[in-house]
Every structure is written in structure tokens, then in C-alpha cells.
Length: 182
Image (tube, rainbow, N blue to C red; front, side, top):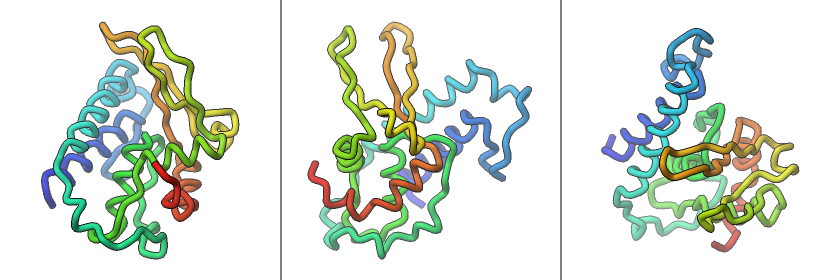
């Protein structure tokens, strides 16, 4: 297991804790447990996001991915569904399920496909001119939802998550998604 894989596992475990799930056995953590404190939970989500950003910076060898993507090679039964996941983390999880020499499906392709299908929308620019990909009503119907968060000193921002149903939906449509241009 290389360092990048360890980081992704740590991110998954921290995200599960943030969602009130014991990462060792998948059981729900008792409501009065310290990890279910809203401040601790937010901190854990923040740490999970940092781990994700750090792992994205790790070098990947794209030149070795020469085989075109196909869903027949995905070991989807090994996908570990979580309560909520970002699209970039989902794309990294999918990458783990395909052969090392196969091309991946990027989170940008997934996002573009979801926008084309009316499941995501582009938000109006915020006070800083930033836009975000947010769940549409149709997206809410399959388990995509957007939360508003606040970062101290940097203001509000939006984060879109994909629940178990949305993760299944994406897995079921990866072949179509893989054909979506960036």
C-alpha cells in the first residue's frame, strides 16, 4: 500500500466518523458520543476534505493508463458505500476498483454528465464571484444534496454530497459518464 492509498483510507475513516459511523465495523455511533458533537463533526469533515486535497496533489502515472475505460472491468461489488461523499472522493474510490492500466472516469466528467442530465446546477456567483455545483430538485430525488458551510475568515461556501442512492446511480451509469467530454 503506497502513501496515497493510506491517505485515502484515512480520509474515508475520518469521513465515516464525521457521519457518525464507526469505520471499523460500519455501525452507527451512539448519539451522545463525542464524535457526534456538531463542532467535532465539522472538524472531521474539514480534515477529510484536507486529506482529499492532499491526496489529489500526489503524483499519478497517467501514461500507464492505456486501456479505455469499460464498466465490465469494474469490481463494483467491492465498492464501499458511505453515508455521504463528494464527487471527487467518489471518483477516487472508483479508481481503486479498476485495473491500474485502465483509464479513469474523472470527477469533472461525472459533474458534466450530472449537469447535462439536470441533476446538478451551477449556483449564482457568491459575493466573491465563486460559483458552485449544487443539487437540483431532480438531483435531490436520487440522493444528491448541497450543504452551506462557513469557513472562518473566508465566508460561506456550498458543498455537494452524494448519499448511498446517488452513489449507486453513478455506479450504474459509469459507462455513459465515461463518454462525457470534459
